Image 1 (cartoon, one colour):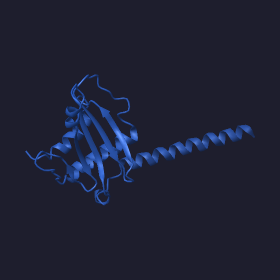
Image 2: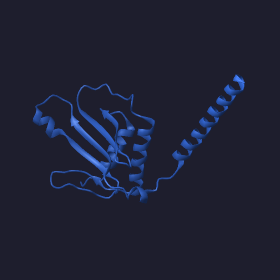
Image 3: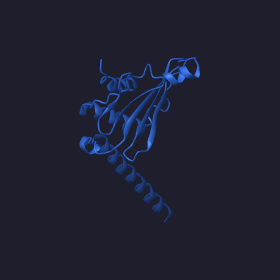
Image 4: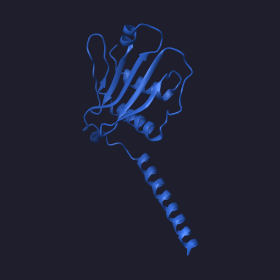
Amino acid sequence: MKNAMKDSIKLITVLMMFVLSLSIAGCRNSKVNIEELKQHKGPMLVITSMSAGEGTVEEFEDSIYEISVSYDGRAHIPNPIDDYEPMMSDEDFTKLYKFCVDAVEKDKFADYKEDVSDGTVYTFTFYDLEGLSHEIYSGYCYSNKDLQDAIATITDYTID
């Protein structure tokens, strides 16, 4: 009786793992419904940068810079004259959304760290569809292609 119970539990566990793996694989391959995403309000990704070198409090506060992408597809890029909010291409918006979701689901940057003593520190914050914030990464990111690509994707919309 005990062996039959153990075998049943093992079988149920294996079946549950199989079903879970299928559902995860199905979600990863599903297409992003961009029109549905753009119905949501608020920020999707906020990237804050600040100087990590020595300086006064005023210099530190002046060094804080924030760029963002909202769920409506606009990139927010402050500049000295006026804040600029161009509409991103669907391709760039989708790429950033997938970057965020993948980074949060896999905790992709949990163990990432660069051995740098000063420069610019970045904080990447993703806001999910319920508005909950998820810190993707905070630290230096000079050598990380994915993080640098996320920054470049937004700043490519800067007016020259």
